[in-house]
Image (cartoon, helix red, strand yellow):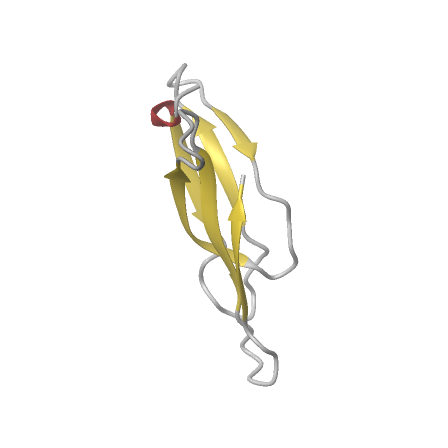
Length: 87
């Protein structure tokens, strides 16, 4: 299915003491208003997703989903971390 038929949700962005582990989900809009939601990310405790893009790698017609995943604690002694992940 082309990426234009799907809505991407990147969540878990707000840094606060009650934040949850974020995720990337695809919402299939092909049969709107009946939609299907699929989580494509793997949970990583307390990490959030900041941005997600469709990306054509290796000159292929099919695009991959690329996202920025990060960790930032409200505890100043915990080291922040960031990753670039591809689905």
